[in-house]
Structure formats: structure tokens, C-alpha cells
Length: 522
Image 1 (cartoon, one colour):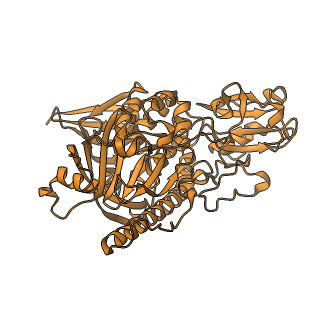
Image 2 (cartoon, rainbow, N blue to C red):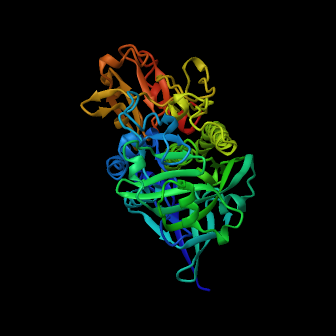
Image 3 (cartoon, rainbow, N blue to C red):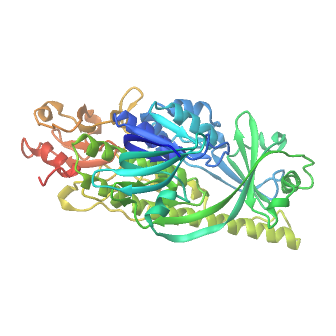
């Protein structure tokens, strides 16, 4: 078999949303990227359904948010509904906060959209090389690179790629993670499930009460696209190979529905729940489901992966371009592993709560209890109000310089989000001008936000990419600043340092950037 060779700065393994987002982010930094995906094309299955408000902020930065929103459902679909069958009334409902309506804490709104609609937008969002039908089968670390052995299934060729770094975004059954022998912690496989994509006219029961997901006693139903299409998912039957999928879906709709489902695709999958014990192995980095597989309830998994690479890619760029030391990459694991564990706990709790409600309702139906009886939900309307976890992520690492040496308060995040200008937190959204947020000031650079840019312009920032942005006076108190103070924002939008008043010395900014990027001891 002929063996070809290639070189790149970063080899991305996996062409799902996380790998494609990393490709777009790294291209913005001018990093050479090769992305390989073992399947011959993008996934035709809907899979992930929710792009939360934080992911949309990242896609706004990449210039992709408007296109994603244009192909997504209207905001009123940002809701879940519990019903006995699809044609019954709701016995419970909950809004997806930050998706069903705008929130004052962000300039964007999340979206309900299918993964097979999202991925083509992400693929078109960058020009760096992508090769489908190419699978990684082995890798070895060398002193200054990783050598990956790939197989091109279409051509029958082997390819040896020398990459300075490998980013593994190849899913819960990650080949890279297995080759590295990285263990994981958590519940593991929580069950086998099947998704059935089908066509049927269900508008009579759903048009007036839209939702992103209808959770019933006989499985869950989800509209796929604004123009039509549906998916049903539930536990995989024991004899899946012989299952009558059109009949199963029709029965799940209920005996009174009298609807024939036109089945288009069937996919079996396992609901995994784990966090890898390591995210970083030399020059190989795990992200997304390869690092943490999260149950789908609550729509946290894919979005956590997008946040992973948003945290990671500026650090990779800094190391590759020479303005950061390799030790900066260690902060990726330090910052993201606690978030992964917290996300997993929330998703497992969401799954358990959902199953409790469905099982109790199913028991009522089977025992002949009055079906109109209300079930006391084990959560409130705030079930999907997870802004604390989505926007309130806090980092504590060497890449954050805290006020007075006090580490950020991490704690458990969940429903509540209180914007704060403390180091380690996401910089709060504040309007800088017409339709221009503080979040729009961030990009492939560090940002210094200050009400007194003249005083700070004399401070040297070389060799780091830095822009100085004027903070309107009306936001000074909100940011905990005096007239000459400043906030130093990392490229991922998290606050790296804060000076409440005038800089202590001309070397202040240089020392801070040196410390954050690990370049040397300040």
C-alpha cells in the first residue's frame, strides 16, 4: 500500500461540530490545519438539537450566527413539552432560557436547529483542508511533533502526517483516547437508544403549541427543520434488527393518531456519561465528546465541546506563533475538566428527572389511573434555565491573575447567572455602541477595556496581539473600575486580569501578559 506524507501545525481528528468549530477558530489565527473525518461525508442524522446562547456568541464572533439562525426554528420552539401522547395536552412544559426569548445578559439568542443543518455552515465557515473518508489508525509522539498514520478509505492509501499538535474531536468512542490509554470516570453507558427520522403530517397537534422536543410516555418527538421532518427517539427494542420501525413510530404516536410514518433513516446509539481522566497528553489534546460524553437531556454536550475549543484554540495559536509557552496548554485541562464534571452532573440529573416524570406518567396509564391527574414535577420552570452553567463558567488557573491573589469562586453553577467583572469569569455583555457588544470587541487578540485608553497606550504589549478598547464611562462602576482602571480580556472572552485604578508601573501590562501566557516569571 503506498504511503504518502504531509505536515501541518494542527491535525484535527473528527468532523463534527466541535472539530469544525476548532478548524474555523484556528484558521482565524492563521494556523495551518488539516481536518480528517473517517466517514465519507457529514452526518445525515439530526443528532444534537440545541445551539445555546454561549455557542451562538462564539459563532457571532466567527461571523456565522446569522446564517445559523436563518436555518433554525423560531424562538418559540425553544421549549419542551410533556404529554401522554403527541395528540394529548401538555401535563408539563419548560422553557429553554436564552433560546425561547432574548436575555439581557447576551447580545444573541440560542437556536433550536439540527446538527445536520449546523455542520454544513461550519464546514463552509473556513477554507483549510478537510478530508472525508480518512481514518486515523495509529499515532506516535516525537520530540517536536506527533506522527499520525491515516488510511484513506476511498483511495486505499496510507498517509503519514507530521503535526505539531493533534486535536482529537472524534467522539465518545474516540480512537485517539483509546490509543493513548486514557481512562474515564462517570456512570458510563446509560442505555441503548434509537433515533428514527421520518416524515408525517403532525401539524394538527403541534402547530399551535410549538416545541423543540415533545417528551411522551412512548418516546420523544422532535421537529427537525422549519419546513418539515420529524425524529422519534427512545430505548432500542430487544430485536432491533427485525423491528417494524414505521409501525413502532405510528404506535408511539398513539392509537388515535391514525398517522402512517414514512421512515427515512434509523440510527442506534449509546447514551454515554463520562469524563476523561486527562484532556492533555503531551502534544495531543482531547475535546468535545472525546473528553466528556454528556447525556443529551438539556442540550449541554455539543455546546460544552464548542466551549472547549474556544478555550483551547487561542492557546494553541500562541504556542505555535511563539508568544506563549507550551505550559499555557496545561491550563486548558485545568480550566475545562471541572466544567466537564459539572456539566455531566447537570446532564445526568436532567436525565434522571426526565425519566422520573415519564415513568410515573406511564405507570398511571398502565394502572388505569385518571390520566388527567397532574404530576408534581421534580423541578420548576427553571429546569432549562441553565444560564449559570452556560454563561457563568469560571476559570481558576495560571492563565488568570486574580484580584489580591484570591482565586475565583468556582462553586456549582446551574440555574442562576449573575454577571461579574471578576477575573476568571466571562466578560459581561455591555453595549459599547449601536449593536456592538463588549463581546464583539474580542477576537484573535487580547483586549484591554479601559475608560482611559491614552494612559494605557504607552504600555508595551509586544509580542502579544493586543487591542485597546474604550469602555464607556457609564460602565465603569459596573466593571469595578475607577477612571484609570482596566480589564484585560483573553481571546476567549474571559477576564485575565483587572486593575481597578491606574497601572502600578509601565511594566504592568507586559508582566500580566507574560504571566498569563506562561512566557516567563514576571
